[in-house]
Image (tube, rainbow, N blue to C red; front, side):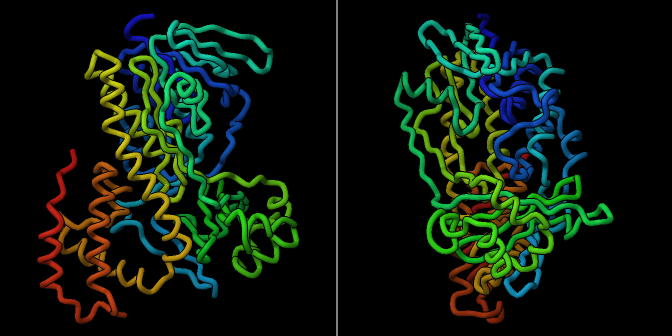
Length: 452
């Protein structure tokens, strides 16, 4: 194999983008995918939770020249539309205005766009090729076509694992070396439902928002699609009441929805059938201490750091991985050094966004309609306007900036402390000692770096 040849395992979102970026930079790239070509057979992904595309992911798509094609089919979301238990609705904006929004995108459509981009850039795509075994010493991988039983051997210089949370490459690497793998389940699962278009073909509810029905220990969300549908996701504990253990039948599902999500019931005409038919998805966080095996293999995206979906950053983080890995491979001729540098840069940031994703579940299901939270949010907006060079809400740092996740996590911790201290015991912003608050803010938060 030539020094400029790389083999990518997985032709999902990260694999398609990484193949594009590397091929554009002159690498010889082969991509192996266990499923069939979705452009021929239709998309057959396991999950269909809509994806929230934010600035980090957009930046990566711009680098690949794929941003326009993706945004053409995306739906803008200005903020969270919070549905109270009493039927009231309130829009909580994500950013200052429509310059700070996120985009709801279809996983399947995005995957197809990136596969087309990878082929145009010169990558070779091989479908129905499941990674079966890897001989790291001989640098030989064996793939199996499960439709025909055919086995194929492939010599490689290096394997790049973009094959998701159930990564076959990670399994092979773990058999060769201890990666420090541990998986922490959330104790909650999810089930998908759908809001169809209105009779006139339009959206049934506000399209430019992520809808949330927060109910303390559980919640529903709905994200818009360009087909004028909404993908609805119910998140429940695995045990307890209510939970997926206690809500099993059609009748139990309807009773729960009529009690807790009453305004959603008329929007989901096939509620009972979909609840009975659709499986319960698993929510867990994957931690690894090592992502690479000298110069022979490296993991990225969900294969290295799968996270729960509550910050909408899993794809965006994976796309940042793709750009970072391509940059390190270009800068450092020694692949082992490039892989190690990539891991040093990205692992602390992956840990930070994994933690923030877990925290955001609590915020979404229990705090978005809490009086203390809303008061702190009002003060947060005020401080962001008065001190734009120092105080940017953590959500905005994560979603609309490309500051390292670890930096956003630490600044967010300090900012939350200031907000809690300033609003403790208050039910309004009247009487807050802003002189003290401004001085504390200047003391604890250095100016933000200017992004290029």
